[in-house]
Amino acid sequence: MARITLVFWRDMPAQVLAGSGRRATRVELSPRFAEAIDRAAMAGGARDEGAYLDGWHRLGPFEVAGTDAEATTALADRIETLCTDDWLRARIASGGTDPDAARTLLAALLPDTPAD
Image (cartoon, rainbow, N blue to C red; front, side, top):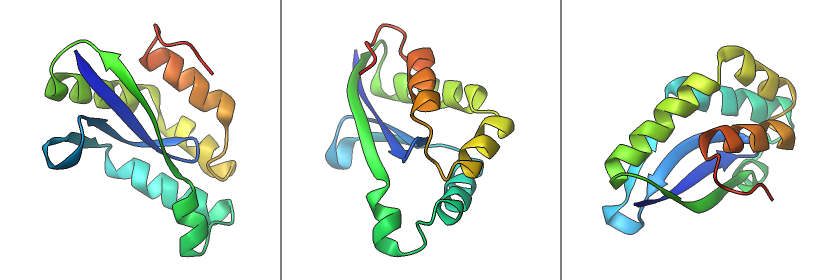
C-alpha cells in the first residue's frame, strides 16, 4: 500500500506524492494544470506572492493499493482524464475556488475515502 498525498492550489490539483522527504515519489501534473492555476490565480486576485502561496495545501495521506510509483502514476493519470480542459476552464473562471468540484474529484479518485 502507498500513502498518497495530493497537492492542490485552492481547489485545483497540481501534484501527487507518495512518501516524504528526498525519497518521496512525486508526479507533477501536465503543464496545462500549472497554466490553469496561474490563470486562476490572476482571475481570483492572488496577484502577490503571499496570496498565491496561501492557496497551496495538501490533502491526505490516503492509503492506495500498489507501490509508491504505481499509485502516484495511476492517480496522476486519472486526474488528467477527469480534469478535462472544460473542467479547468471552469476552475479558472472561479479563481480556483470550487469546493464541490474538488470533493467530486476526490470521490472519483478515492471512492473508499469518506468526504469531509
